[in-house]
Amino acid sequence: MKKGSYYDWARQKGISRRDFLRFCAMTAAMLGLDATAVPRIVEALENKSRPPVIYLNLQECTCCGESFIRSAHPLFSDLIFNMISLDYMETLQAAAGTQAESVRLKTMQEHYGEYILVVEGSATLAEGGIYCTIGGMTANELLKECADGAAAVIAYGSCATNACVQGAHPNPTQAVPIRRIVKNKPVIDVPGCPPIAEVITGTIVHYLTFGKIPELTSLGRPKAFYSKRVHDGCTRRAFFDAGQFVERFDDEGARKGWCLYKVGCKGPVAYNACAVTEWNDGVSFPVKSGHPCMACSENNWYDSSTPFYAHLAEIPNEAIGGNPDHIGLAALGVAGLGVVAHGGITAAAGGRGKKNHPAGSTDAKQRRQVTKKTNDKED
Image 1 (cartoon, rainbow, N blue to C red):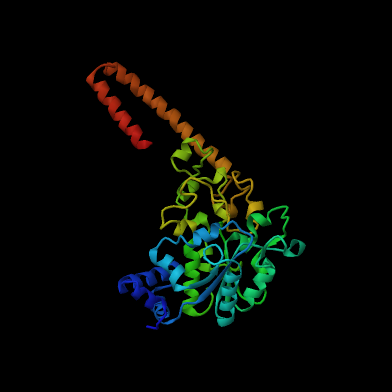
Image 2: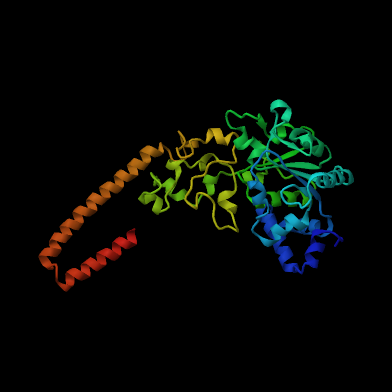
């Protein structure tokens, strides 16, 4: 065990060996690695020093930073503040002005080529970058200066990966993604508005363990988290397949938790781990909570996903073999026929019941109770 390693810190804090190993196993599973990777994670966290991290806030709203510090599992949140050495982050550090900037420069000089640069927010090109300046420098100048000495750059959040709201039409500040400015270092895109906290912690652990960035998708995102659609693991997927859609947010389908596709869910085109990892220790994610997925992890999402509460023109890959409008209507038609048929049968049975069992009789009361229980169960 190397002094100053993450495990060294964990022992000092009274974290048991069992909890430490459990954390390593969870991290491997989260990264999509098999059990053979767990010993390597254990070894890395026992013997490698905490990497310094410089965290920049450019054009953004700080929701990514909020997510960053709210990793649900205690050891994941510990990772943020203790496993890494978070040397510079404007929204959390106590220092300000010259004192803060001197810390950033000191870290860059003493750990040149070793530190991780995390960037939240977009760069801006309009009028020489004057719409975002920090410490007397434009965001572009600051970004280039910090990226030159970084081992890797993580673009954290949709502002950093696709310019997000700032980049939406007409984009008055000419906001651009980080990779448009950083050309000389590997850039890992971690999109989302905001991203799931565990995604960035998993990405950092992978880098610490293997000394290289994780496998990326063709869009430069960690494959472990962005290779599947939200739609693939959605808790409402069965209703989509059955053609049962919410038509309005206050209808019966909404109360029964049916598919939100028709009220604007973009889950079929959104690649993210929301439906698998969820938020707040696996409590929920937007679709599970009753709100359509807005595909915030996709490029140009703010322009392409609006209007937010209108569904896509077509289902990608013909996943259900037809237009959802028609399927929804067909399903309602079948349901309607079922209701009519059920009503007819009930009326006929009621007629027989009235004939054989007077309304006020004990048999009639028992039949109504049984019918009510059956209807409640069907609902």
